Amino acid sequence: MNSFVYDIPTKVYFGKNQLKNLGTELSKYGKKVLLTYGGGSIKKTGLYNKVVAEIEKTGLELFELSGIAPNPRVSSVNAGADICKKENIDVLLAVGGGSVLDCTKFIGAATYYDGDAWDIQLRKVPVKKCLPIITVLTLAATGSEMDAGGVISNPETKDKIGMGFPVMQPKVSFLDPTVTYTVNKFQTACGAADMLSHIMEVYFNMDNDLYMLDCVMEGLMKTIIKYAPIAMEKPDDYEARANLMWTSSWAINGFISGGKQHAWSCHPMEHELSAIYDITHGLGLAILTPRWMEYTLNENTMSKFYQFGVNVFGIDQKLPQMEVAKKSIEMLKEFLFDTLKLQSTLTEIGIDDTDFKVMAKKAAKGGTMYGFQPLDAEDIEKIFRMCL
Ligand code: NZQ
Ligand code: ZN
Image 1 (cartoon, rainbow, N blue to C red):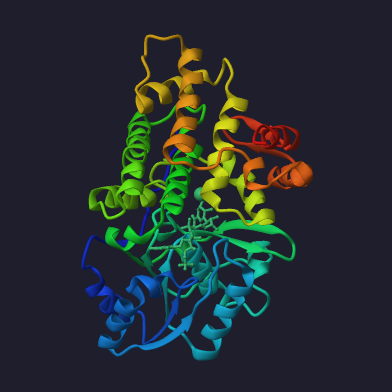
Image 2 (cartoon, rainbow, N blue to C red):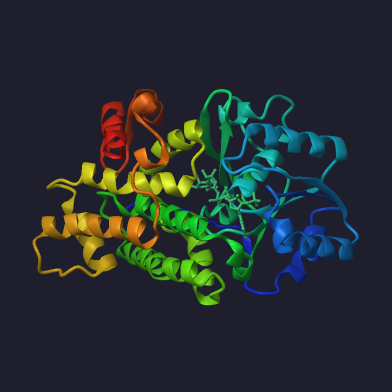
């Protein structure tokens, strides 16, 4: 077991009617606020008006950047950083899903850099400073509200790169489950698949770990499996939305990793898919994850799948380990493709093998991904093919 430092410094206001604290929290960081948001869902739902009313009450000066796209582009990061430099912005307020939050983190960092923000993604410049960030989360999925990372796309180079720096961690996040009532079935399902993957990327490992954390992870996975279908069926079910929202944060805020450093597997592969085909992140993960499991299942790894099958899906523990392991993958497929109704193959979403070689090479970063099982470009290409 590894030693680790526990430090999750985001203050969270969870529940209904917490927005009344927004003005006070923003005021702690200065007078000029840049509000960032996406393609307009916050205007349709009325959240925009509520947020602006809170800002006006406190007498803060408001600036805006709208139109941040899903799979956020570096052009939005540059546009936001330009506003911050020109207007001497003191604090950033991101209102949206993971894409808005991620983009805002890099706006905060790029404000202290004079070149193209893409240089940050390429690790050409170290990020030591970032404007303070406050978030109002509208979609339970990525955990960006409580972590220090983000993922930015560059359509010109067809790259999508994830990166994180401690200074980009949100200072405060507002998590009101009622705000997610308007998230449609598809995005709710994709959010559930994303959260599940964040947990599985850590859970599936061959280390001798903290039993306590394995139990937490199994509880988080069971929570998603229980509540995602309810939220899809009854979008304003508070209990379901609340359970999903808090799970999204704890799936990736650093707690469950308990110091584990092993590389993630499905995320680097998925980022190649959304870089080229601009698909929804959670959908790509849903298609990839069971195939990655089938590829990595063997006599050495089956005990972890057995544990997963028994503790998460309640499969009979008396059955042979390999049988439980295989059944657990089948049950995951059923959940993703039958219950959540996500498309199950790349072919169905119009993706063929044209780019697999390049994507596999990029995902492996020219070497080997040392995750649950080591995977080189050849292995990754095979997994992509299993998704056709
Ligand atoms: O743009 P608007 O109009 O706001 O609409 C959005 C968007 O079309 C809509 N939406 C959001 N909240 C809504 C809503 N519609 C109705 N009601 C609401 N309350 O949903 C659509 C998708 O939004 P997006 O922010 O793209 O979704 P998500 O939260 O899944 O974020 C995905 C991005 O986060 C990255 C992904 O790669 C992807 O780029 N990730 C970030 C991570 C992190 N920061 O740690 C980790 C993840 O693994 C992930 O890679
Ligand atoms: Zn993810």
